[in-house]
Length: 376
Image 1 (cartoon, rainbow, N blue to C red):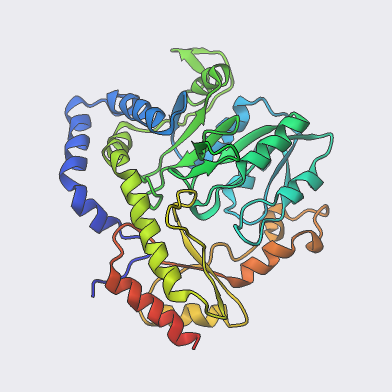
Image 2: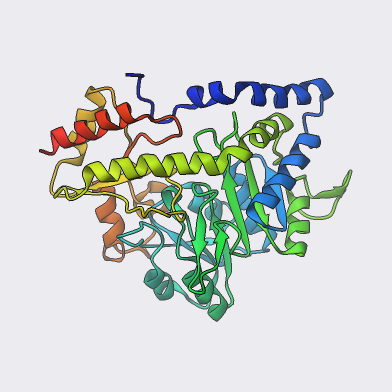
């Protein structure tokens, strides 16, 4: 059996080597390393894929979140509601901009931001909601947009983990995650479903004026060279990373289907086990693209299971071991432990198994057998 990787980027690259190498070689031949043709080509191709008016590439996913908030003109002290159970970048940029983060609990079933918790957290100072499409599963954007419209709030989607996922609305229509809120951010970190070979990110919006503002912000506030019209940053996707992404974008739907198929095999093996709550996935599922495959382990020793898997050469991880409201940087007297029952439960239960496009049946069987062996 081939060695199991948490993310097998090497095997993926070997299958697309000629296409990726040729795309990178074009950049090397033209020496257009910054804002070159490959960046503009990728931007247009991603706009078409997402069916969104504007894609603004930038240097990484964290910058994308920060720049999205800068573009909206949020002011110090404005409250921004987001999920307690997610990676720190989501709240990090809120704090960096001297906005007031308002962390709320998540839903026990989908692990995304709780709709009821959002409603309870709104105050006269609330200006925005940042839903995170966690682990690749689309958040309930229909309900979130309804709340935002009722209270005149901005919605900034954190789509770093769910590019390609679809959000289904009650009228039967579907839209890509990241194209529904006022503005969205994504990351092209190498392990993402659409990943480059370094850092990279992008901002999406259908608002022409907002897109114009953001295009200036990412480039030192310039629209004309040496004319600084807005306060900006230096955050650009370089042409080599755009070349990689352009080569991989046509494969994204296939990559996501491969992840979904692996998730079905995992969940089938775990079905009905008294100690395992596995992600649900239907035959036509397209709302979850499985950036991570995350189990909940109940009435059993999750940490001992992790040690068991690692001892057998199976990589695994806990995303995330500490709630944001308990992180030293974000501790605040406003937060009460009783406000976060689900998050506090999840951090004790979750464990993520290998998930990538190169998993084969032999590896999946070995992984699932090893989990079941421990939990027998």
